[in-house]
Length: 149
Image 1 (cartoon, rainbow, N blue to C red):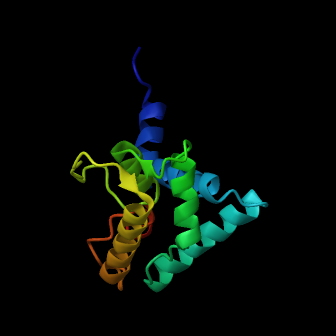
Image 2 (image 1 turned 45 degrees about the horizontal axis):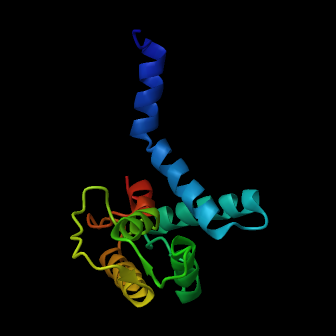
């Protein structure tokens, strides 16, 4: 079946404006934080993205240790105190702290809560240090990709 010109135009438009990435980011944030008023939360999140883009200030991550622990506990459903490397990598991607093409090395060990917290905090700190201005090419998080293009 041949793709119509209209479908191609739509796909190009979505790609050009990174709409799929934006929707994915918003959905991930919504499902992670599960706010009582999801529509208001999404509006607030979009407004923060807009302000960050206009001012050149890095998008603020609102991840404190309680959020990191909650995310880890959701992945560690058996309560063993560890998660798999695959879960760890997916969590970093969901948080925008790991790019698709980043080559994380699996050392064969399970990821503990302390290791997970340490890595999330380290990566958030690195992003904040790299993104003091809007022209920083190293800002490779989901929010950064949406803000800086």
